[in-house]
Each structure stands twice: as structure tokens, then as C-alpha cells.
Image (cartoon, rainbow, N blue to C red):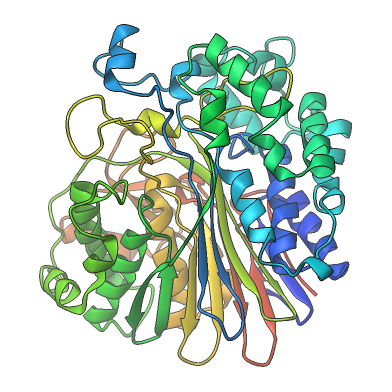
Length: 528
């Protein structure tokens, strides 16, 4: 049985072990949790490219002792040319293409988030960028061993990616899917990362790298231009927050679904469930998820376009009313329209008490699939989720797309701080609720809370069904009880990618650090 990694000096967890080790090395060198996370983010962009990359977006929640948590929203906005009319002129009136240049319509924000996060580290103690990006550069130059997860995902998504400019040359081998263990080199990406290390992160948005990207994108049908890169800057935000009987929970602001994750746990807290892993636990969280998703789907989007701020959804009276709608014995009829997305979540903590929850994504696997051969960067397709029809999600210049991404953090009543999260699009809030409730509410070991069987209401990873999916390790009696309550149950493999790649870090008041990783991923949790 796996157990949490324990230590006092530092901790990091990531869904690829190379990223965890890169962050560990920075912590051992005296770096902060923020710097360790930048090193891990750069490394995992190289070593887990089907899940994320520097051509995507990122979000941070950072806890520092004695200070309120800080949020960083590194969410790129839609290009100045991106309008329904622009797409209509090019033959697209119903939907934005999901792959290729036209899908790459929002600026990649994650590196601007790294830059903003590093600015929180006192300059006198900040490690040089060359050190932080060194491991990522080495992996890009020398090559990565392709994981089984990358190989399988590439094969599954190949039909939509094979002919996208730059994809085959970068991620295929003589036109074929690389086998697990194949050495995949990314020389152009190594050069780009080396330039960023030498000249500064802002050069991703202003200078030769940005010029190369703007030219390549325009040549391949994207509305993004050089001015859109220059305008891309992360924003410091105040995280959404809700109090439960266990402490104060934080998550990311709109346009992410962070409010959904907070609502689920706040609604479940109101149900007063006292025992984990039984019908009341699973049914309660699933029904809380439905209430949160209904509100999310009706009104969540760019905060400038919402009828009311997401924080208002967390008012006690609103939550009390929604909790009263939950039937403790019978399932609410489903489905609803799901949201897609693939991602990585990572957490880090240092001996000084800083705890970081971070998430980075290109939306679908490999994003738009469009890879700039000069830089080795592929661009997200997050903007493909915009609508071309009138409504709250209609595409407009400068608009921020809906994000499934939501890094979670909580300050518990007993003095612990927990950072937790997962990839998995529609499943992110659900997996967060599973890990949090198991560990915090019902006292399960942190690693066991991540390892334990999970569920997914709705679809993710391209699955067409909107059933309640249960990993095949649940108590048969609980499964039968859920079916009898009206849940449309589907059994999935016992350690399924559909259940996400989760992780968590806990800092105790005495300085003890716990870290957990997901056996469903290729990750590692290190605490020393």
C-alpha cells in the first residue's frame, strides 16, 4: 500500500517524476516553492507534452505564512481579430475548428504567470532562470523517454492531429506514433527555453520568439498577431473563498470553474455526512456536483460578461438553498452539457511555509496541434470552446475563455494548509471533492485518499457517455445502492485515466510536509 511522502525541508508532487525531481532539486538548492514550481512547470511542459506545454495557460494559488493567499490568472485572451464575422468569412459559422490554426485563437498565458509568480520571490534570494529552466532544457536537448500515457494518447487522437502543420515532425516518428520508451528530442524547444533563460521570460511575448510565433500562426490561419502576444499579461487576483466546518477553502476566479469545486465541498459539508466510502458519501458528493454544475453551465464565463460575480454563488443563503435541493436518497435526473479539457496539476511547499497549488494546460491533448518548427512550441485550443452564436460565451476580441482549470488550496481549522488538484476537465471538481473529503473530513491517509477508487459524473477524455463512471474497485454493495437510487452507473477500469491524475501536499503547523501522487499517472511525490 502506498503512503504519503513525509519530510520537513520541502515537498513537491507532479504527474511526471522528472518534474517532481526538477522541483526537488530547486528546493534542495535553497529555492522557494514558487521557484521549484517554475522548474517543474518548465520540465513537465517538455516531458508530458500531450497534457500541457508553454503554449497554454496556467493558474496559481500561493499561500505564504501570515499573508492572505494570492491568485495568479495567466489566462490568455482572444485575439483582436477573433470575431464571429472573421470566422464566417473563412467558412465557419457554426463552430470554431478544434484543431489547427483557427483553433489557436487565445494568447498563451502560462509563461506570464511564471514571471508574475517569480516576482513574489525577493530578488536577493531568487535563483537565476538558467537554474530554474536547466532541467527542462536538458530534457528537450537530450530527449525524453516517451511514456505509455503519451503513446496511447497520441494514438487515440492521431486522426485529428496527424495533418496539423508541425505536429508530425515534432511528435511522430516517420509518421507513426512513438512507442513507450522512444527517445523524443525537441531541439527547437530547447533553443526557445534557453533564450528565455538567458534573456528573460518576457521575451516570449516581445522579441524574436513572439515574432516567429505571430508569423507562423498567421501563415496557418490563426487570428493571433504580434500585438496579441505583447498584450498578454498575467493578472493577480483574489481567490474565491468559502468557509466550511473544516476551515477556509480557496480556488481560482472565473473564467475557471473554481467556484464549482468550492460549491461542491460547501454543499456536501451541509449534508452532515459522518462516514466515508459509503452510499451517503458518494451520493452526497455526486448530487452536490449536479447542483454546482447546473449553476456553472448557466452562468460561468469571462467575469466581465457574468451577470453576477462568482463569489456571490458562495453566499451562505445561496448554498443553504442549493443544499436543500439535494435528495439524500434519490439521484437527480441527468445528464447535462459537459466541458472538455486535459491538464496537469502540481503542488509544492518549502521549509519557510510557502505552499503552491498550480495548474497548466493546453485544453485538448496537444492543444490545437499546431507546432511552430522554429521554436518547438505548440499552441492551445482553449478558444475553440467559444461560441459563434449570440450568448454569454460568444467569441469577442479580448474575451477570456471558460477554463476547467482550478488549483485548490485550504487553510484548515487545525492549522494545516493543503494544496490539491488534478487534471481531467469535467472531473476536476469531482476528484478534488473526493481527495479533500477523504483526507480532511474522514481522516484517510493523504496518499490513500489519492489512490482510492474515484468516480466521474459526465464525460472527459473524449468519452461520449454522461453516465456516472465508477472505477472497478468500489464495494459492490455501494455500487448497487447507487444504481438503486437512480444513478446511471458505468464501471470503468480500476485505475483509469478518466478519473484524473491527482495530487496533494499538506503542511502541518509543526512544519511537517506530506506529499501524495497519483498511481494513475507517471508522477512522483517527494518530501525530504
